[in-house]
Image (tube, rainbow, N blue to C red):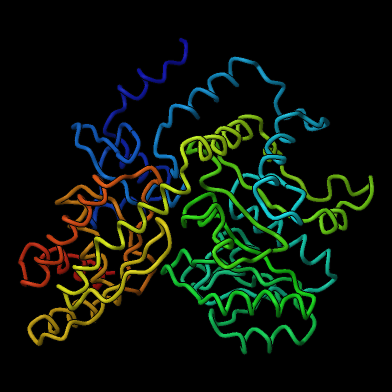
Length: 459
C-alpha cells in the first residue's frame, strides 16, 4: 500500500496527546493539559495557527522565533518544491555542492567585512558548539565566559553556558572552565578576562530567557575588553538575528564587530532545520589548517541542500519584503500601544526589548487587596502570575505567548516579523482585558491561577 500522508493523518486525527504520552514525552503533554494549551492544530498560515475546529490563534511565539516570515510562506514553499523536483544530488559528502557556497556567500555579504567564512549545521545549539570548539582551537585557551541568565542551547557544550540551573541539574559534570559573569557589569567581565585564559565571551545581545538587555556603553566596553585581552567576542544571534530586533543583526544596534556570529531559527524559513557559525578567514583557517584537518569538525546534514534552499529563499524574502524595517516599525508601534497599560495597571511594571522581541514584566501591586492574591500565587510557585497572564490570553483570546523563563514574572512576545497593526491592536486589547480582570480580582483569572497553584503544590 502506497504511503498517503493525508489519509494517515485523517485516520489518526485526535491521537496527538495519547501518542506523546505513550511514545514521546508524557510530561510535556501533562504540562500543556495543566495550563489549558492542549489543542489540536491542523494548519498554520502567516501569523495564525488553526485548530481542528477551525479556530484561529494569533501566534505571538512563532516557534521561538523560527517563523519570522510567518507560517507557510509561499516563497519558501515554492523554492523547496522546485528543489525537490530538481532531484538534487544531496549530501554526497565528498563533494563541494553549489548551494552551500551560495548561501555562505549570501550570509557573508550581510555581515561586517571581517566575517568571511561559514560552517553549516542543523540548529542554534550546534552553531554554539562549533563556536566553542573554534574559539578554543584558534586561541589555544580553555575557558569560555557567558552571561548570567543565558540560554545557548541544550547540547552538552551549549548547556555548559546555560544560566538556568533547572536545565543543568543532573547532567553534570559539564564542560570545565565555563564561567558566568553578570550581564551589564564591565568590572566583573574584566576580572575574568585579565587572567589571560579566556578563549571566548559568548553572549546574546538580548537574552532570550527574560528578555534582559544591557546598555550601549556596556556592549562597546565588553567588545573593547575582549580585544584588549585577546578573547574572541561571540554574538549568539540565533534568536535575535535576521531582523528580529529591527536590525538585520542585533549587534548592529551597538556598532559591534563580533569575531563569531551564530545564526539559526529564522534562517530555516520555518521548514528545514539549519544553523550557521560565521567567522573570519583567519580564525576558520586555524581550525581547518591543512588537508588532514578538512573534516575535523563536521556534521552529516549540515550542508543539506533543502536547508540551503530554505536559507537562500529566506534571505531573499527578507530583502524583497523589507522585513527588517517592518519589524522595526511594528515593534515601535507595539511598545507605544502598550504604554497606556503601564500607567493603568500597577502590577504591570515594564515593557522592554527591540523590534519584535519584547518582554512584559509584572511585579507586586501596591493595592493591599491585590497584594494578598499576588503573594498567594507567588508562595505556591515563584513567577506564577506571568502564567496567569499567558493562560487567559490563550484560552479566552486565542493568543499564543510564553512565560519568558522559570521563576520570573515576564511574558515574552516573539510575533512573526510580518505582523501588522491589526495583530498589534488585537493583542493590546486582549492584554488590557486580562489585566483588567486581574486588577478587578476577577474570579475567572484567579481561578486559573488557583488551579496552577494547586498543580504546583501537588508536584
